[in-house]
Image (cartoon, rainbow, N blue to C red; front, top):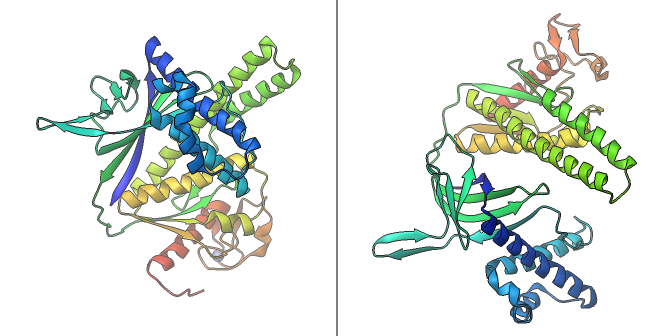
Length: 382
Ligand SMILES: [Zn+2]
């Protein structure tokens, strides 16, 4: 099976390299904004027309010739994609790109052979902590300290600059691996995000992390501060930059946190079962989460991480797709207790068998049982 992995590094360009990256981003932005403006007055033009027009634009603007021509093509592709999203009603009308937002450009990896040796225009050296990039040469990197080298074939590299003026490179690698499905001996059911983010049938709860909550509080405070300041003033811009920095921190922290949870779950179990998020949203009790959209995004990210990690480790991941009142059924005796629709009941004694149940752990046990049936294709006995 072919798998793709992205390795993201912090990039430390020299002043000259930084200048070149900024000029490349500037050219890409110029092409994007030029054609966005052009399309306003010329309806019904398709992407082939734009690609055909690109050499003319380059003739008229000498500075565009300095940068990689594939970057300029990708600006046209990005714009076409933005229009497709707009026509499909996924996003609003494309906006002009500003100098201050996050920007990136991608360069493809090209290989050549000379005197029995293979050369490549993108190379990562984790021992000396350098990356070779087209037109930039060697640039210092940080990240993946515990690995000696990148396995697999490099496909491309995306160089980006975020709103706080930090530089990154994301290297896409293709790897050919053989995966043998393992014979499962352990199984876990997972209840997703009512009070905690994750509750497993082993009784482990992963909460909405405290550090994350702290960042979010700080974010809210800064946003309140921003709303009081004069738009465009020096202090306003300062606060705006602080907000961007906290946003970046939250994003980073959440990424690592979700990764850790997914790793722990997949490493410790062979069959992993969750409810499908769609079903969960439609039927499950509505809860006012601390930040609902945030926790929804985290949950879907977490599920895709678990799915991906199970796949490459030869394990099994199931999503329960049918409506199943997992939190109302006693996992010991199967008695359905509709009083449990009341969300404030976190623990209770089953009126039929008397066993003491924790609401979320009981739900995850039921999810485990449903997964077990699914895996062994058993007919429901209940
Ligand atoms: Zn019971």
